[in-house]
Length: 189
Image 1 (tube, helix red, strand yellow):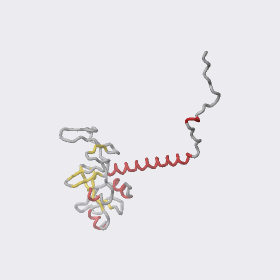
Image 2 (cartoon, rainbow, N blue to C red):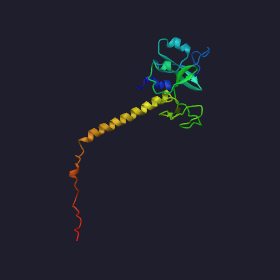
Image 3 (tube, rainbow, N blue to C red):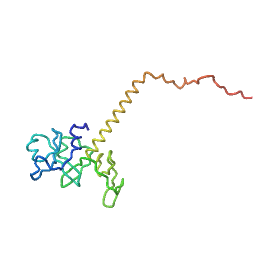
């Protein structure tokens, strides 16, 4: 996933504060994020006045955590590998990593649920689907880590290529010789 410039701002923005421009109006929560402007969250009234023709994501809440509908985010971002959840009949995904439940155990099973054996590659949270990440934030972190590891691997390969010509030639098996005076076994009597 090539990380778009707005992703980091989307993940770090504080949502659901009261809009300072519309503090006297109902439904004034700042739960929208503009992909063009990439700055602070804003409310529905700001959208109609300041972001009318801009691509906008509406952030929602689920168990005190920020989520976004899959149908909105998939138009702007590759979300393959991120765990989806169905909340209020809508497929959503979490923006950021959530704390692991205290009583969770890897590979937990119960008589009413299937075996849980997938884990987020970034935070190790248990996943139900064959997904790699529990949230957009974990995917972004995982992709950054993978990119850094790939760059480090390429750097080492280039360094090895550069030094290839400076090493003495390797000896073949029949050209192995001892250094110094040879030590012979004594003659048998």
